[in-house]
Length: 546
Image (cartoon, rainbow, N blue to C red; front, side, top):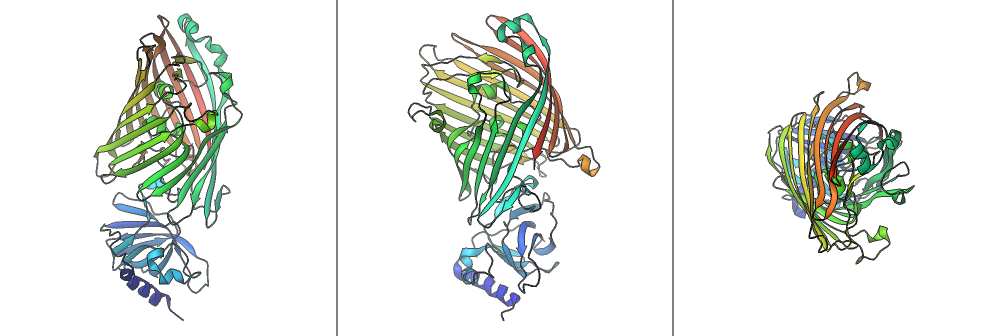
């Protein structure tokens, strides 16, 4: 009988003969590896999934509990890989991780090159192909999830907790069911006669309503380098405003597959266009706000069907992304009769403190469309249960449009400031090439001290992680915020209107699965030669399936 220790030493010695000892050498103080399967070679007990911490080349900790990721650590996800070696705490680390169970297939031992994903000998890492974990918000997410956009709502969710009813795991496929329901109450405080002539009587929009319901299925196809998939759906039957023809009982929001290409990621399907930090962020995880700024909602689409590719570089201080889109599949028109769109975005972190609590984000993005079938821009008052306030109407002879966006974000601990400028240049001989533009500035401060983490893969901010919920004797996460936004859809002979909006509010997460939000807004609208104003208060309750 071959002893496990002899088997491990033999496997480690075989690595040089397969030409992979220099594949990925890491020379770091602390290395954290999550989701490692420790197998029972004697088959006397069950396998266990653990986390392993290596400090200064020595094995520091092996535990079934989650190990927090400190600022000095670099973390990897072993995605359930099988470990062989001496796991003796305090000794120089020496073990190998395989991506399949060697007890089932002896070829795994004979062909180390094909199956080894990590190896460390005498405290020095000589092989690593595991998925990097950027920060603790990646903890518990689907392994290999490298999509560009932040997953909508609560997807992807913790897939390692097999006790949860909404988690399904098989060897080839992992699946997680998630969703959210948003309920809100709208109260309009003022609506002067000019504004009533511009947009109509606002009293018909007051009262309680279901803002939206969404559910989704996300997960991975567990190849050697896992593919991710996402499918989300919901209903707009609760919505009011815009044209009633736009309402549908059932809506497919996302259906896409994310495929790793080396260090890059390729997404195919219906997804967010690679433009605008606001549009790339999930609605309920935006810094503080209930709704996106009118300029982002009015000038940029929500989603589109196409292909995107993205990656980061400069030691994760910069990202790039590009995409091509045409949603002919959902419009029942040919590709040539539907607008074809090209997008690109670059972000950078010119400053980041040593502990990463303070940073400066810069971004620039562009979007070109051939404007087939014309274009139309419109936006509400930044209160969902309300009327359209700015509207260019259809520009049917538009030859093309070009958007560009500029982004600036500052984070200093629990304080965050995000600003964005967006402009669309329209080529139209009838309307003399009008230009529409706008901007917003939002400031947020988390009173309870949590810091909104930064996604270095996508160049966006994640949700605030509740540090001490009411279920553990704390107060939850409490945040105050304010925003100023402006959109101008009047130029040349088009009088779409110019709207400025001030908003302020409080956001409370008693636990991570519940959000309570109160938001006040005051808007002025310059349209049809007059200036009107309105104000209102929206209270919202959100339940999130995690």
